Amino acid sequence: MYSEMRALIIATVIVLLSSTVPSARENTDVTMRFSTDQDIIRIVLESDDRFISDASTIITHSSIKIEFPDRFILNRPDDFAFEIFKLGRLLTIYIDNVKDARAFKLFSPPRLVIDLQMDEEIVGIPLRPIPEEQEVRSIVINPGHGGYDFGIASGNVREKDVNLTIAKGLAAELLEKGEKASLVRDADQFIPLHNRVLNTKKESPDLFISIHSSLSDMFVIYLGTSDKLSSEIPDKLYALRGSQSRHIMNSRKLAENMQKAFKETFKKNVVIRELPLPVLNSIDAPAVMIEYPTLKLNTYDKHMIGEVNQSIIWAIEEYDQ
Amino acid sequence: MINKRVRIVMTITVCLFLAAAASSYLFFQRYPKPVSVTTDSEIHEEVSAEPEDLMTVQIFYPIYTRLHMVEKRLPKRKKQLALAEAVLDEFFKGFGDGKISHLPRNVAVLGLYRDVYNILYIDLSDELRSNFQGDALSEYLLLKGIYESLISNLQGFTDFKILVEGKEIETIGGHFYLKYTLRNLIS
Image (tube, rainbow over all chains, first blue to last red; front, side, top):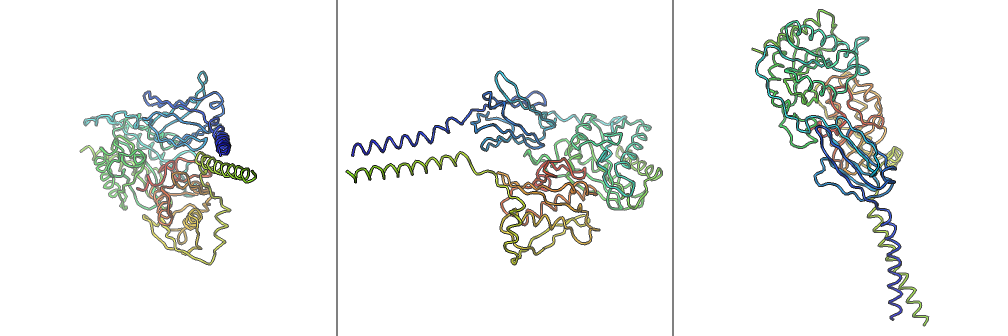
């Protein structure tokens, strides 16, 4: 009986050892650290030489995927800013509000470094004070689309060109009246939505006007949505951000002035709509988007464009009263 | 003596079996099942298996300035990914003669993937972007129509994300971000 028990114990130990040894050999520690410097967040992943040199990294708009050569144990800081997910050899870091991201490998000690350049708003840059009434204002005009993004096309007429013509004419007339006007794009070039927002923020405008075409035969003026500001980061992507929510009443006032001006000048229907447009919701100034009536039923010659711009200028002047 | 040896052999065999079972359990605990990916062929195979059964789906078409719900009868699908593909196909077929709805034409569903968070990734052909000719409201209703049509007919998904030709793109028509999931836009 004793020899039976001994054989049983030896066999069990051998089997258990044989099943656990490979697992212990495969696990490698990966230590994560992160630091913040102004609008840059640096993530550092440290491990042994083979692990770092064989790791592959894929960066997309919403995530960073790092595939290590083997399974690993992740030592991560408790206060890490982003959500992460670990599955087998794959580590996914979900990123939000990142303007730019780049990864590189360094050695001594071996480490993978990921630098994330954050959208200014997420790293807590304070909102600028609302300016007192002033004589010269800064107005940023955003001609929609551009480059390979034609917008709506009707025959040879393309929305991106009409938008730019209107915006240039409007900027010239505003400059003549002593205002400071600037364009988000002044040539036929593609600018991503995110860059339009960032370029506008750099100008710290007092008013923001975006120019697009409607599909319908009426003017449509858009405002940001007037939802409550969400505290959850994912919802901030579309919900009104702090920067626009405090200007929403003034944005509406400007939109209503434009509605009145377009109605009187063109005798067309003019509607005001709220939509969670990212270009409006992110702007720290009264902001509207104007859609002029469809290119398919209207000819935007010099006279027509002049009338559109005169109506906008009248609305801006009324806004000051 | 023989009985004793047989008993020892049997005991060792049982122990080996138990140890193998235990190590298998540990192994599969350490290596969870990979993210499920259903290919087109799997989807089509299932549809053709039961062609006689029909089900009703709700499709939300952008018509003028709002979404219009239409009920359609389609062959029954068992798998959620197959159902998602059928719903998207119906959606992009459009409503009426296309004059009152500005859906981009010839959009094909290239793939559907469910991730570990139960987000459905919808890989669509480039026609989604290249054939889109719309204003801000059209783009919003297009995205909202996709979301409402999927969420009304599917179960077990938390959110939806659109890819174009397998890649994340910033926007379809230059008005709304496409780099985030749809629920953030709609809710």
